[in-house]
Image (cartoon, rainbow, N blue to C red; front, side):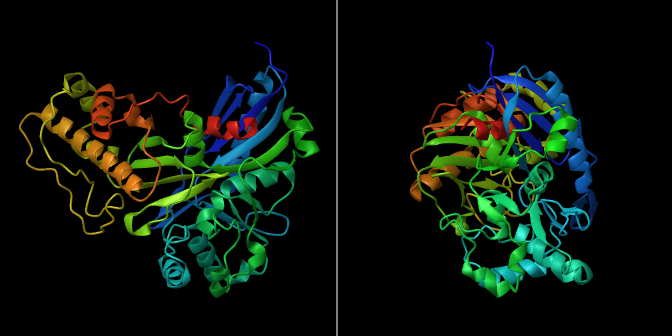
Length: 425
């Protein structure tokens, strides 16, 4: 089928930049991926040079432009949540970006905890706000040159348009933005923060500006290509699955277990590790457990798990009452930093032990969705799955039995596809 136009989505991840073009009906027309150098880690500090993102983005767009069967009319970018950089008045980075998992700003997180409401997304040493306060404190010589505090997606969109200081509601959640009031809250004044650094915030998908004419020529893209407000990688991945009605949920089975449920109202329960992201006039409510694939890999290799999977008997529960954790501490559905793993007794048969671990993680998933329901979320209707665990059919049957709802195949799982859908609307 011929199309007159398409939409571009970019996922700027830690290890690579992925781009996709989709038609107005959601069909994928082209893809491209460029690898990135890994971030540099020194203790709790994790940094990456923003120029790596910009070079990778241009390479992806140049390649996509050569493959497109029709011109694109929107482009949206998603990035890793809470990855932050400071720029000068010419929008040049004032040093490396502090990555999403950079956790050096513990004293600054304590300052935030003293004044921020408990349901704010700005809590924690890895939040954007903690990183910003740390940067201002440790770079007094450059603080006067700082013009913008920007997230990964914000800066890249600015590079494409020439307009900086713009962001979206999802990326700004961990910078302290209030998604209910859709405003920067008054408590930020207690942080003695230069407010001019904070970006102007729009809902994801809001038109920002056309692409710069010189870049349009350089990359072979239309001069009227509209750059629109992006989102975070996890929100884009949710959109990619096709879940779009209250009660529909997405479970991420990666190194950790994370759940998100589409709701018509927010739920904030930090005592349970539950948070809400705004998605236009709906909300994604959920939490992230410390359990997940990382626990499985403490006991088995990927090859061993693949070999045992056909031997699993989902219809015959092991009866093992495990709570698999990689170490001490849990975030959700139990928020207890002193909680110990429960993975004993261990049967002699590795297959039974493996199935017991999968059952334990599935039980945590079911408990998480049950807790959301108790706190007022819509009744769980179905679950789509992303992450490496999505490819294990036996685990899917175990989870379906524990959660009591159908496991629906995700339309797509790539965040770039979800970003592109912001242009589709």
